[in-house]
Length: 359
Image (cartoon, rainbow, N blue to C red; front, side, top):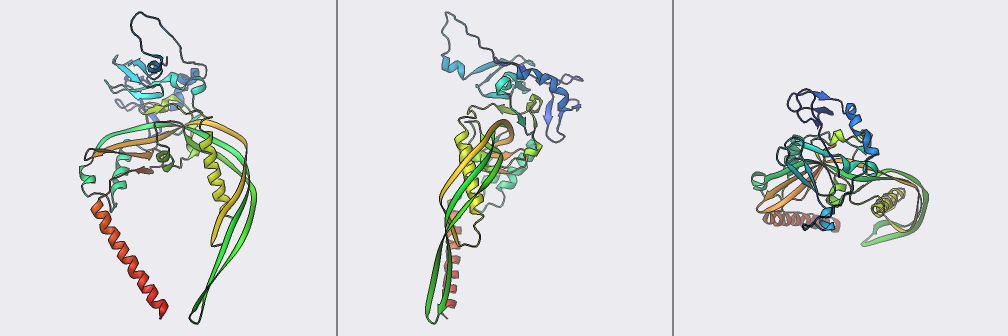
């Protein structure tokens, strides 16, 4: 079973956390700060540790194997309260005393991440970003910003697989050029068709794929990119004060998604080389991937949940760059009002263009 790790301040015994503002470990009680690198000895055993496997036969009714595999129970070292987690939780908070805890076994041995991007933005930054995100939305109900309630906000380290590979590709495209002219009262259109062939090579580094089924893949991709130049070797100290999940979709199961992202990017890159045409449509391709490799990373994400008129709305913010996305309600009356306005404007412009063209 994984063990609970709490980083305690040697000055006052308070629980220290990673502070995104200073990029240091900080005690919230006496304000003493520590370099995360100084805590590396506490992580040294992670490479060798393996999760314990212990089974007991008792006469009492037991949990089923399915139930046991999805639940872990720990005892908080600060207050003795029980912390119940699922199988993928790597860092959390005690529900009784609120102290941050790291479950070291979740990241030991083969499950230890290679790199982590520490949080750069704080909870207050996330709140401010959400407020800014809501402002200026013309179709947002006017009472949403005022009456919606921020129910939860938490910083989560999300597991990602990062793929790197060399790609050799061949493409053929169908392209067109259109020329229009007018002679007297007659209008002429000439469309010329082309076949384009392209071939070459690309290299990809750190193509990210979300490794957690708890996180919406589309939402996670929408808050990209993350700057890997700020990634550092994994240390559990960075998890203190945040939530963290280990992956439940392994690197092999994530390859299909990585291949699709690489294929999409390769297609866009080769299409961009076809300049000077009105339309460019891929007709066929051959993409060969070589030297593929994957590494395990933890990315910082702020998750914010609001409620409005009995419905929950979730937002995700990149904890490094501040990019935020999420769904919001639409005022149907405002939607139809603006729809009619834009339709009327578009119709007016069309009539003006037609009028001057026929002069």
